[in-house]
Each structure stands twice: as C-alpha cells, then as structure tokens.
Image (cartoon, rainbow, N blue to C red; front, top):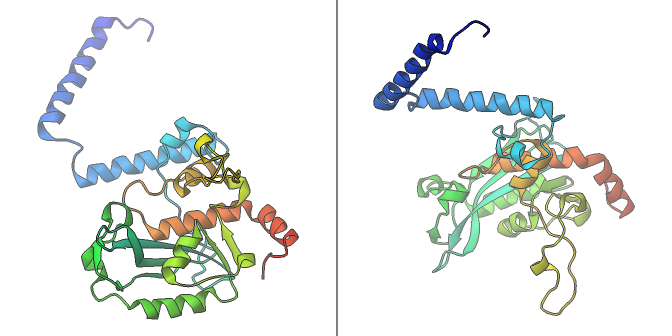
Length: 265
C-alpha cells in the first residue's frame, strides 16, 4: 500500500459502513439460499482446516469450527460383514423418562444405509424428545410395528460384526442381544475412553471403577474432524460416525479382539 494515503482509503470504509447499515435494514444474508451458501463456505473452511491439521483436529479451537458431517465412503449398498447401528428413542410413562424404540438406522461398511425406519410405539408416548431425537408424532403414524423391525434386525445382526456407540442402549430398546466377541462399541473401547473424573473414581462401595466414556459427538470431532448432533440427532449420522471411528482403529482393535478370543467372524 506504499504511497496510498489514509484519505484515499476513506471512501471504501464509508462504503462498507453504508452497506452494513443497508444490509441490516433489508435483511441481507437472512434468506434460506444465503444461509445455505454460508454453510457451504463454513464446510469448505473446515476442509481446509482438516488439511492443515493432517486430517484431524487436535485442539479445542479447531473442534469448535468443525462443520462437516459423516458421509458414505463408497458405493456398495449391500449388507456387509461389518455394520453400524444407531437408534433414537422416545419417552413413555408418566414422566417420560422410560425409553422405547422410535427409529432404527443401520449402515454397511461403506456407510450406506441398509435400514432406516421409524417404529410404531408399543406404549403411549409422553415425550417425543424431539430436540434430541428428531422424532415427531407424525413420524410414527403408520410406521412398521416393533415386532416386524425386531425380526428384521435379528436377521441383519446374525453372523455380523456390530459397531455402534453405547450399544447396550440400542440393543435394550430392540430387546435383542449380540455376542460380545462380535461387538465393537466406541463407548467402551479403551483407546477411545477417558480418565475418570474425581467424582467417578469410586462407587458407593468404595471399589475403584475403570475409565469413562466420551460422547460420540466429542469423539467424532476429536478423532475425525467431523460434526454430529449440532441440533436434532440423526441416527444415520451417528451410525456413520461410530463406523468411521471403528475403521480408524480397526487394525489395533481387531488385534486386541483376537487376543481376547474374538475377532472378525
């Protein structure tokens, strides 16, 4: 800028100020199209940040700017030997605290959906938990009955490696179980867990506990540089996130499983 005086730059500053006032007045940038373009720019910025950080985020500032969701990594749409599961629940009972199944999502090893369905409630729903579950009353009207989905899931699970996060909750909602040796849970795999907080270090009987689970959202940001659960949850996004975490750790994870008597079926 050598030779350019402050006075010469002044009109541009005034113009920017005038545009700011006009933009506020006419609501520029508030349309759906403008918001979409802004989101696309943020996603591109996140990609650049991932490139600079070697494909993953390693600090809180980087995590705060994540904006890209998990996506399929291939074109295969068939059932594969490894699948990932996530469920959404709604609340029943007087206080809505008891959970029942409302949506089931399963993706294959490429992250493509092989099952994604709402499920007719088996009891009167008192809390749809929409802010988290994303489930609304109209989603469950005409949905397949629980028994039908349960049978379908039992068939899908048979003989396969099941990946997910806190899978005990999903399997409990489905009223199904799955062999431990064929289960890969990102909430309990030690390299993905965290040290216990002080209040967690002992149970009521004084016996020390193991390690604590990180949330899937935190793991997704820290390990993958991706964002999930920014608002209403998507069971498809969450299943893909758990799958990507497993795949990142798969070599060491399967080696550990083999030593414990498990491993790929």
